[in-house]
Length: 92
Image: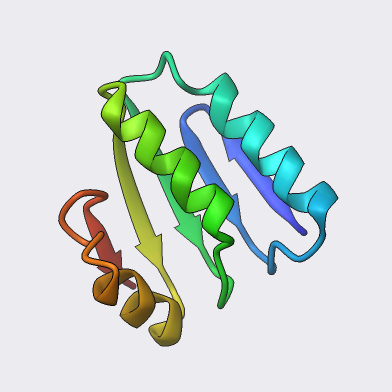
């Protein structure tokens, strides 16, 4: 997994594949829970359910989650899960 972090912006530049990748991303997201907003730029075709669950938890705690998705299949999945409005998801 290739990540870049700049303040509250997290760029996911490759697939989140291994358990270690998921744990690392979860740790990063949890470290941002005091931020008013988190921006995710996802240039991958997948997003594990545990990451989606963590994003929902952060959203419930009042953190605004904005997601820019570069892959059509991932965008369609998030749309089918009815998360586009909750996370302010847009296709880039």
